[in-house]
Image 1 (cartoon, one colour):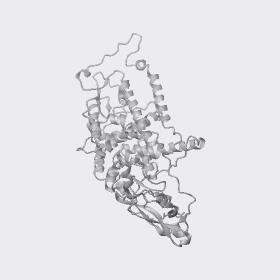
Image 2 (image 1 turned 90 degrees about the vertical axis):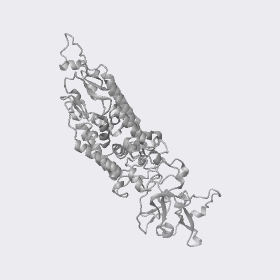
Image 3 (image 1 turned 60 degrees about the vertical axis):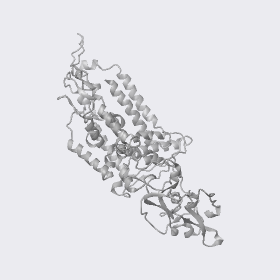
Image 4 (image 1 turned 135 degrees about the vertical axis):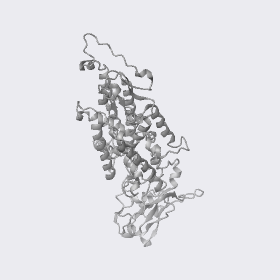
Length: 548
């Protein structure tokens, strides 16, 4: 019976390490192909599900989990859901706080709460995505990793960068307050529930667990009690799903998460994980006690049957723990993942004269339009974690209540790389449509440039700049002669039809607090004109055009 438990533990640890590493990694050390683990989660699969198209959407993933649950029960919750595995880790590590005398016990199903939250979740999938953001277990895990564990991980990297600058590099670190508070609240909630009630969150609050619970009632393989059970209660005390009633000899299969802890604790082999065969109801044979051995029901008898391999199991646990922590040691020096460099300090600085407010938030590439993006994004923040420029940040109220914590683009820390499509590749819910070719990205317009002449240092101080035109990859910003010809000054001129909204001009502009040039968002993404006519020779921009 140990086989089932340790097989589950090994698979769960493998998946948990892989998905955690993918969220925490900032050096592109973890292969990008690991994003398939995120695509294999149930809520993103529901959001991209299209029953008319197979093997191109989440339909096949959803059907896979339905069939697997019908066969083996809620194995998704025990081996594939990182949020559920995180609860198991908390429950295991807080065992010392509970004390040796603490045991789980059977509790009745909280049907009203359980199915009420499931109905609310379905309502959120159709009408209000914020509900999905607050209830989806995978998105909770992503935010906990990014806003709680990742800052700690980066802080450790920065300490090592000071000690060994030749092997590590400094990475800028920031925390979004709204996302941090929500992640911390959920972490404290599951920590308390895991401490005293095991998988209470999965069996009462989590809508994915409730959906799978409805299916697992009809699963082929279940935890079953045989007639040899003496109602000793050992299985009930070890059940973190609180679904085994040892007195009435029943197992609530809708709440069983297939952890197999009960199988390893039963001393009489009265619990089985199997098909409902009549042969399994036969009373198992009990070993005949030797004359010198104590009675089977005595504590000494139980102690005598402790497996000899317990020491080996203990070493395996230690090996898995050390493997987990060593996997996350910071990587050696790499330019990938480093934050965008700050504006050149040699440029003239200025204080803006005119204030303004952007009319629309800027959506990430592939979002296509606000209505669609708000409906599909679960705010898991995987794109925020993988963005090499660090320009994606959770929104507060920019997208309204329906878009709470969904990512938007800000250019304070960098600008969108002309050739980068990483965010569209890793998005599990396809809220960001995948961009297959870089040429598509070159023409994708996520915003339009606006120039505020009154704030430009050329206008305010009669000094040369031109940094915005120098960094524009499409020619949407170029320099034209300005003022007294004897001063050889040039000032930016913009062509919004050429602009793709990458934000390079806004990022490098030295004027504060309101930039002289900025990108305003679009409700619906469009296509920019090609930077140069492909049938003509690319226009050469003279150095004099930049004004310095």
